[in-house]
View (spheres, rainbow, N blue to C red):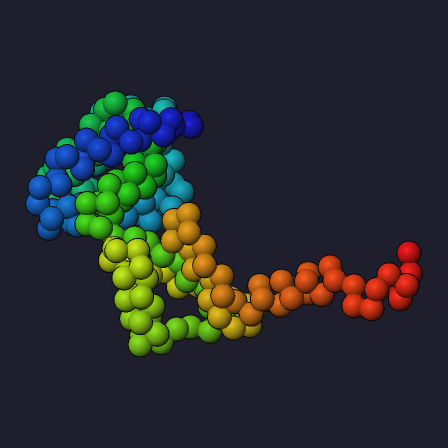
Length: 192
């Protein structure tokens, strides 16, 4: 079932309001939700069970209480997941997690940044990049690194809707375009 983004935003903000006043609980809930989403993504059977409209909400609640309460998860989060199951909104969990993470990032002044480079960055380079981006964006930076050998050199940085491309690949493409667009000796040297 496709879930309206507004529904996910409402449920995410409700959870955020429950845990926002205590930063340690906020970070614990965020980490737990992220881990749960990873488990659901890895095991399709678990996700199909929770997302299935055929399985009764009461049965989903029983499973949530047994599994998640036994794992010593935050009681607020367990109750929240039960509420999602009872309201038949557990299928919106991926969108809710995304919205929740955005709210947490805003509160904690964090920014997720993806950095692509031709080779893995060492710790010193990562820290220098994190500091430079943090100074520029006025946020603490969470780096996600991608290795893309086709870039040849330089970096491609994605930070939300900001793209910074200093890769050799893009510079060579621009140079090629410029050279093809210019006529060096005039019209008479080119065939039509």
